[in-house]
Amino acid sequence: MKLAVAFLATIGATAAFAPAANTVARTSALNMVQQLDLKTGQSQLDTSVVDRFNALPYPDDKVLAEYVWVDAKGECRSKTRTLPVARTEAVDKLPRWNFDGSSTDQAPGDDSEVILRPCRIFKDPFRPRADGLDNILVMCDTYTPAGEAIPTNTRAIGEYLHDDEIFVHIYHVFQRLVHLQSHVVMSTLLLLLLLLILFLPLHLPSP
Image (cartoon, rainbow, N blue to C red):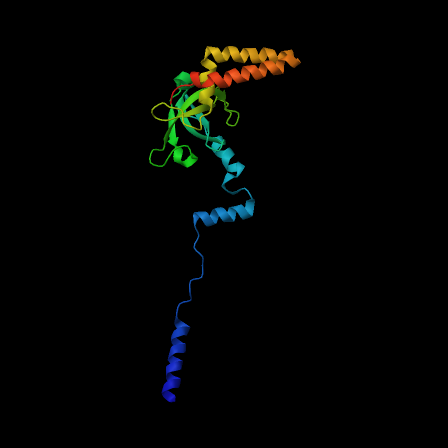
């Protein structure tokens, strides 16, 4: 009995001097972002942070070009690159770019490169400058590295038809008939639509 009491006393003394368990939770970048979400409601997109970086001076003779395209879901995607001013004076001077099409459902994972071909340039209203230069928005179409329009690039067929003389004339006829606004217009439009359906496959580029 005395031996058992001595054994229990030894265990109690040992536990008394044992270090306390570390109950402090480890912090991480993700935890910090979640805490910021709760505290400010703005998270890492806090406008004061964005404004601070937008206020940084730009390098001489350089502009930000935001390449914009449409993904497989019809939503806008974009990414930015820095270019010399001389490369942004016209569309044909802009370099083509690329992106991983598998991340936008526009290409398979084993062959995911998609080429961005610049089509139009607009002044960037979201990143104004006070040094006399303008950042730009670059509207782009999407192509394979071989130069073929990817299936989600529905603008490609419109561009082709716009350059075809037959369809240009048909479009002008449609436009004039619409302005007439008479009952004869409907029957004529139906006739032209039928002709368009019949002759469209003859003028489309072969795959």
